[in-house]
Length: 221
Ligand code: GTB
Image (cartoon, rainbow, N blue to C red; front, side, top):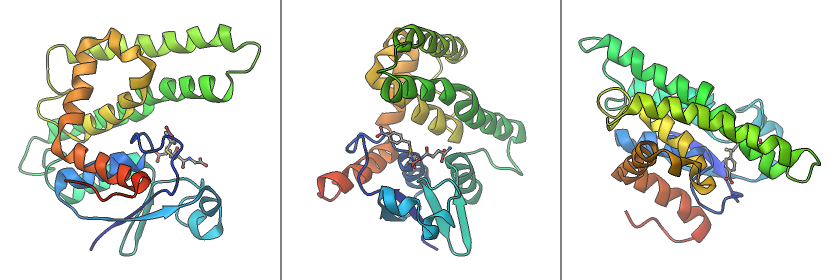
């Protein structure tokens, strides 16, 4: 059954791939699952029909037959459970490696993304407050602290635990949000890690597909 995602009809980033539907598109591309997209306006996201799918009135959502999901972590995990390629198999494989890959998904969402979101809030929503100039360095410091720890763990490896996994997909998606800040440049192995994720053909297809929404041109891949 072909799943359907929701995505912004008009993304504030104009197609830079930072809205969270990109990580779902990427996961589906990695496993070779075709999908459809329903674009929603900011108004429609707060209407009852969308709120029935997403209690917080956000994108992305994921519908597949009778199943409706929200939260990108749950959606990527669901895709990884239903298809081979994003997690080591649950049985007949390395169960510990699977558990570690899932751990990296949680680490990306629960430990790395929050300070990055804080920075976006501090810059976009609080930049005009009198205390903003004092707060920003503190927020950036919290990010650098996490990146230092992440960089030390990654070392010279390509991915966080052996081969590419849903954990890396999520971690790259989260770190991508820092690209325009320049903060990643201080951690060359993390910058290279993000570039490796972006270079994956599945990521490129996902990126092109979300960009096509804004250019009106069909994806080239
Ligand atoms: N925890 C949820 C998940 O992981 O699914 C968070 C979902 C979420 O924040 N969705 C955002 C949303 O719907 C879009 S992705 N916001 C509208 C609202 O809350 O009313 C966040 C996002 C939006 C825009 C950019 N951008 O333009 O750069 C980047 C990221």
